[in-house]
Length: 426
Ligand code: NDP
Image 1 (cartoon, rainbow, N blue to C red):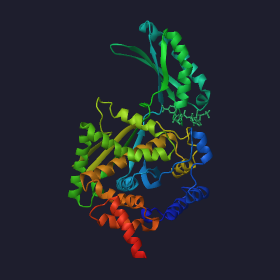
Image 2: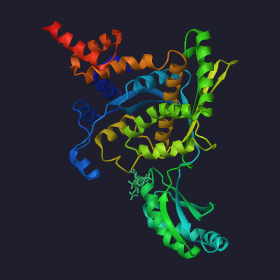
Image 3: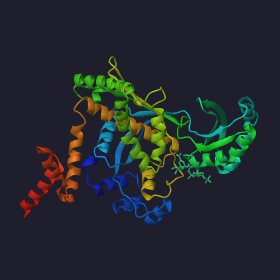
């Protein structure tokens, strides 16, 4: 059994394929079939004022090729056409050798902001003199991460000021291994805070992890042979040229950059959520990174090499995700996602998320510079409208088809079509 025609299969058949390819156990296959998700009692202990659990569609992008290995990526998203677009782009990119990824480092940074510092020179030399001692205090606050081969490894500082205030900001870098590290960092920072206040003769305003995870950067790239974009080479060249232009446009215009990056996050968020990670942390990190050159820019770069007929795409993102901790071990659907992914470590998961972001971006740009974004959206939008108008599962396809042929594709038409369909059946 393979993934061929996966999108045409029934839900049951898709689960069967995942099981037969050993991507999920019998137990998880049963849970998917029965739609057993987050246990309501577990949910009650995860957040406050809990009243129920809240569901979203759970889909699969099959056969994405990353670092010469094939993966199936779980995606959780409410937006129509995102999974289809990612699947289509991944297929095109796989034909050209797939994605390559690089991770330079995977550490997290936390900060303590000191104010009312009497003597900055003395304060900073005290920090430097006591560097090792401070690292030791930090590590003693969370010894288990040291046992796992990680822990606090660097302390640095910066003076930041405006006309009214002057801060001495101390940065702590921690190797968090497989965790995202917010709690690990916060424990360590709170432990060194009183020592820093004493050493520098100042007050600490706050001690907290920074979500700007510049020591967890991941680069994903791909080189697409343009014959895989379109069989008509002239048309493919035109699309490739326009994708390069579109990436330049997103570097220049923040109005476009916001939408360009939103498209990237259609993919990223869906996998970050499916993998049980903190998507607010990923969004905060990446959007801040998008401003690193002084203005908000598109996060990806596409270059068309006319001589070799290759379209190269690249994206670098901070990716502060984890394979353990947070809610990862608590949510049944998250456990299934990790199994489908092959239980990756944090570096592999970060690579897959970044590659998916680039795939999603390619899909959006390709549609935008050729047929336009609406063509692909409309079929799925018609399904959503049919559902919203009250179509039963068995009539969704037919109502959606009629809706697409209608002059006004809206809720009112959908309701009318459902009524007509019912009368016809009578
Ligand atoms: P956890 O508090 O769940 O800590 C992860 C724990 O996993 C570690 O302390 C460690 O505990 C255990 N662990 C098991 N195996 C490993 C391994 N191989 N490598 C590393 N740790 C391992 O999560 P984090 O500290 O990662 O914090 C993430 C959570 O914090 C998320 O839920 C996030 O939403 C939340 N958060 C985020 C903030 C932000 O982004 N600004 C702020 C505050 C919270 P042990 O060694 O003891 O077994």
